[in-house]
Amino acid sequence: MTQLLSTRDMAEALGVSESSVRRWVDDGTIRASKTAGGHRRIHQHEAVRFIRLSRSDVPRPEKLGLAAWQSAADTTSAAADASKTPKTPVPTPPVPSR
Image (cartoon, rainbow, N blue to C red; front, side):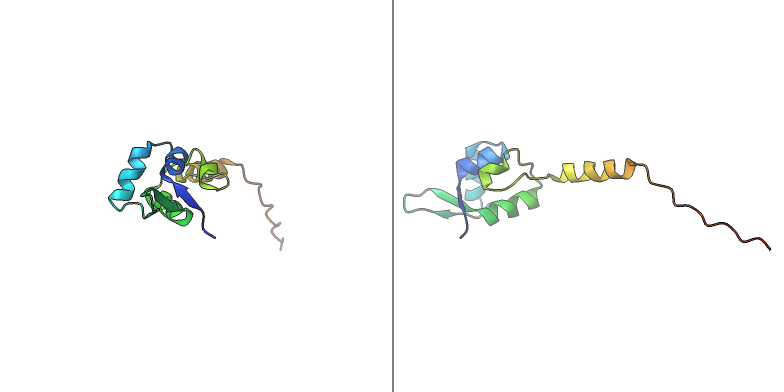
């Protein structure tokens, strides 16, 4: 079953205002459904799609029901850190003498 998120949950997860999320839903940037009472509900997979496409940081991934989220910036810096680690030298085989 897909988890449904409120605009408040999405806003808190992204660190933006709830009105921004409502605006994104209303202009079609984020796809959502409405309850009988007119409240917007965002499917979890749609939230992930939006985050990936917009490359948004997610300061509070637990609000989306997700484990710790690694932003694109974190991934880039992790790759840069990995390239700085010293490499173990590979021994060169001895050259046979004639």
